[in-house]
Image (tube, rainbow, N blue to C red; front, top):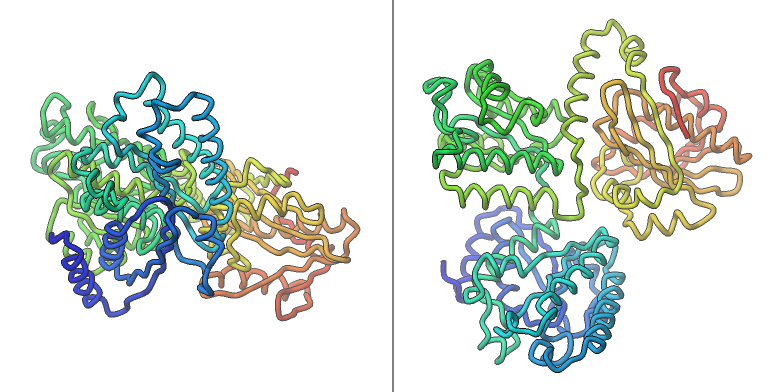
Length: 576
């Protein structure tokens, strides 16, 4: 690859020419460092994703001013914040030996205070990344006792700031430099001449990390679908049989597949939904999952599987239907070049990858998948697979029931509803970011906004958890309501699609009616704003409105509070 600026520009244009529908994205880059080379690689990576990226370079030393002076431009799609350790104060690294502990603590407090103010100015409509601090000079290993831990301490405090800002992600640049090797990542001569220490190799590695963190040009990965033969074990089970496949950790290939499986299980623990799609006899595969002594990835780690002799593209569509997820959230790994080519052609929304044959390539692929799962503030969800497995069991019970009433009456559905739970802020903000199908307005609210509403006495923020006899589904719905005159005004209502179809929404309606009556209010108004994605939620409210003879207006429907109370299904228990 030609890493010159002119070579990069040429490849950008070639990439954009390949896409019929080129979308645009805008970045603001602000901080203490000149990032010209990184800017070029960001545009190159965006072009590979079918995006034309424009950038606005800030002042490099005043991020707050960069964020508050928009120059009449709308909020950027992404913001890159790039502080540099050596420039916290003039020649910081070189002066460390001269500074006292008290002086360093004062500098640290000033630095963290500055970036706390900066992060608070990031617009709620934008996403941001802050690049972690790292050393530039070679003196770093030789500082006096305790100073070598300073960067780690500064970064730890930056991470703490990011944790309370759902829209900003921390990128550990130091770990990327460690992987590349310092001599390949940092150019001290260019830093001294132009404050530009990033080499093209480092910029090339950072560009996809930054765009993934900003969720620019790629859909988040939710489902990892794996072939079996020569993908999660070596060999073909139909030929080598049970004892012949490569999984023995005492052999090079067997050891590689064992490590791969351990990494996949780690992804499952972080919330990845793992499935199998393989052309095999199902019982052969299940025997390996259940009985092979060296198998790490077991049946309990899987949400579902399709092991048969049907087309893999048909099986992927079937899985998407079962999980009620878009194919754009799937990545499929297969060892067959033919299968990969066919599935890519038939299902262009699926991210299809050829299974690596070397350990380092597997590690790089799984690290990328992990990044796309976790970046953007997604919380860890170790029970997610169990919840989807329970959902499959529920569908089985539903198919066997003679009526909907019989089916629902056996679920033992319980709603646990809490008010103004600050511990739920991160999950609530995540729901606002991701929930579309059952979202009455599709308004996006940040942690900061939700926390402010919790503090206002006229507002109520409800966290709604659902459980049944199969599983505890956790926090799956939220309602924000405001006491307004004689009405309880529901400004926001979101619910995860994985618990729809059990009339839980009717139970929530009944709860809202009860709350209104307890506060002496006679009416409940539901605010609505239709979009291309929330038709399911709008349809539900319209059905309830017709049953209750509600008053309709341009921005929603108004119901009698007692009519709402009557909506409670007899099989749902509500605990407040």
